[in-house]
Image (cartoon, rainbow, N blue to C red; front, side):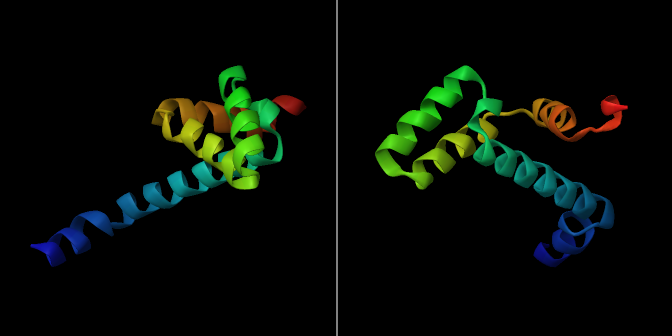
Length: 90
């Protein structure tokens, strides 16, 4: 059963591509927020500042990870589009 699921579900090309893309979106969002916490909502900006005061860079990263973990797929894709879609800059 494990082999069947691995071959036909978990690593099916369509599922694998979607998983790979989702990983890229999350990574890009994390890097952007880490670079500039002003991109976060005010609530998470405050968390990032407080956590960073307590634990340095690890605290800042924790606040960002918490913010991303609370996102729905749709919200994450919208954020990604707003931050990285250059089509509106023409």
